[in-house]
Amino acid sequence: MPSLDHEALVDLFRNRPTLAAELLRAVLRRPLPRYREARITSADLSEVLPADRRADLLILLTNAQQKPVLAIVLEIQLHPDRAKRYVWPVYVTHTRARHQCPTRLVVVTINPRMVRWCSRPIPTGHAGFTLEPLVLGPSCVPVVTDPAQARASPELAVLSAMTHGKSAAGLAIAGAFLEGAAALEDTPYGDYLDLVLSSLNEAARRRLQAMLTAKREYRSEYFRNLVAEGVAEGQWKAKSEAVLSVLDTRGLDVSAEVRERILASKDLAELEQWLRRAVVVSSAEELFAPPAS
Image (cartoon, rainbow, N blue to C red; front, side, top):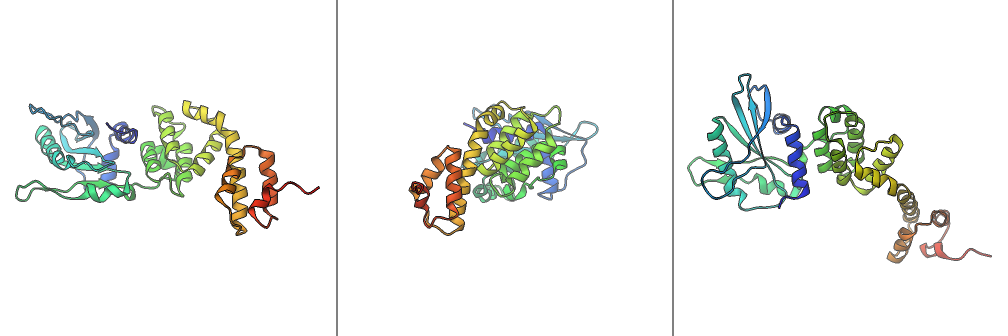
């Protein structure tokens, strides 16, 4: 059964049919024929055989006369699947026969460990016919930190967040999406916002939450709930992490028990007291000592 990430990635390319062609040209450096339109067509490649052959997405580039000039079979691959090495050549040959145009297989993965697996050539057994998938892995996806770029291609910005959101660039990517795509019409902004949020590291997620609170951007039901419940949580989490940061900076050993107690506290006054004491105590355990009379 396809995962949520799998379906989300398919939707990004479905919502922006030109995205696959743009990445083919700009990232994979593959020449494209001149075309006027990119459109989604049926990805059902089944014939009279009982086996279901359905690619994730099939994109046709057509010229001014609506004649196909290139077909792109798009596959999202997040985990190994031995069967794909047998059906991918079928996708290519059946698409080429149906639309009578050159056909390319593009495999998208946000899992860096899958890049090598997806890139392996597929020998078909026929002389000279070895299929070499074109792979868009994490290193191929640009880090979108420019609001103008996010506005021009919100789907690319979301793909960037799903690929690089856990890195140090996560907050910059999310900020670019927030500034660039928020005012766009005819864009599933709320759904995209949820994808960006779920792709971030925890620190970036909290910062983005604060940005949304300040801007009063409540377009996503998920965000409305998160902002309502998360502001207080963000305050005590930030304070507890500040206590630990001071202790770590001073080179004091922090046991698992001490760390757990600090992170478990939701009393802002208590955390503020611990933060002040963290500057002067000689051991982390002294934080919890009763104040001197």
